[in-house]
Length: 424
Image 1 (cartoon, rainbow, N blue to C red):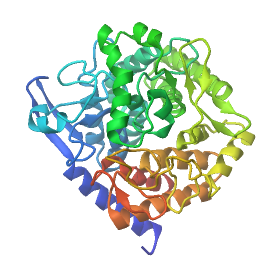
Image 2: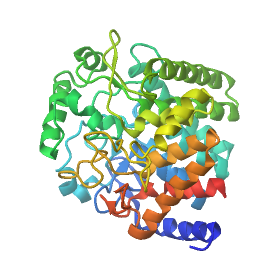
Image 3: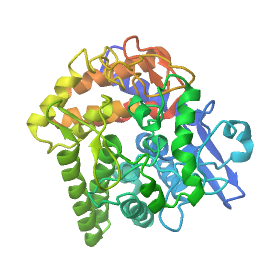
Image 4: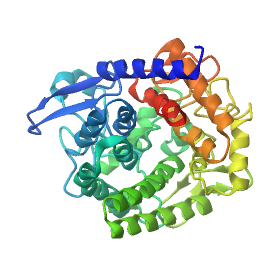
C-alpha cells in the first residue's frame, strides 16, 4: 500500500466486513433476552468469550459505538449475583451442540462457564465511553463492572498482595503455553497429553463444587500469571478513572489503591534481575517460587509507563534480540531460543507455543510507545498488518513467514485497527 492513510482506510473496510460476518444476533429463551455480539470465529468459536468480547468492544468503538455498548452489555447480562462473569456465555447453545461436545470446561450453569479469563472489561468500557457512549451509559454499567473486579479481589487474591491467581491453565487464555507443562505434568507434545494433564488439575475441583477455599488449599495449580496481572492492575487503574468520571470519588480511591498494591507486588515479586524478565509466581500463600519458561508474558509489564527505565530497557532489548523475540513477524509467543519454541502449528490445535498473536502485540506495542520506542512499536504494527493482508484475519501466524494458522476470520486480530487509529 502506498501510504498509511490508505492502509487505515483498507483496515476500516475489512474490519467492518469481518465484524458483520461474525456478528451473532438472536433471542435466548433461557435468558429471556436478545443477544448481539461478535464471536471470535464462526467456524471454530461461535460463542461469546470474555476477553475476546472485550477486545471486540475496543475495535467496535471505532466503527459503531452502539455495537460496542451492546458487546459489553451482552457480556454482563448473565453476571452472577456475586459479581462473577464467566469466561464463555453459550447464548445460542442449542444451535451448536456438536461444537460444545468437544469442550472440556467447568460449568456454572448450562449456558455459563465457571472459569475466569484475563479481566480487561474496564478497557472495553473505557473505549466505548471515549468514543461517544456517554456518562449516562457509563453510570448504567459501572456497578456491574465494579462488582466483577470486587469479585476478583475477594475470591482470587488469598494472600492479599494485589495479584490474582488462576487455578487452571485456560483461565489465562494461554491454554497450552509451555510454561504450564511442568505444572500439569505433561510434556505438551500432543493435545491428548495436554488434555490429560489439564484433567489432573481441574477434575479434583469438582469434588467440592469448585469452592475457592478448597481449590486454593489443594495447591496443585495456583499461578499468579504476569500477563493476567498486568491486565488486571492496568484495568483497575482504568476503572479508577471511570469511577472518577462517573462521580464516584470513593470508588476511584479504592481502585487506585488496589492497583498500586498490585503494581508493587508485580515489580517486587515477579522481576528476575539476573535474567531481566518477569516470571509467574506459583504456589499458595506461603513459599512461592517463580516459573521460568520464557514467553511473551515475561515482557508484559512494559505496559506500565512508570516502570523504571533500567527495567524497561532490558525488556526492550529482548524484543530487539533475534535469539529472543525479534522475529520478522513479531512478537512470537515463546522466545525463539526456548527449546519448546514451535513457530507453526503444533500437534492437534495446540496454541501459544511459538506463533504470534495480535492480542499480545496490541499490549506490547502500546508499552513500547509508553517508553519512547514508537519505532519498534511501528515495526510490530506493520508486520501484523502485512500478515493480515497476505493471509487474512487468522487466529495466529508464523513469526518467521507470516503465514496464518488457526481459526479463520478471527475477530480479535482486528485489534491492529485500534493501534493504527490511535496513532493516526
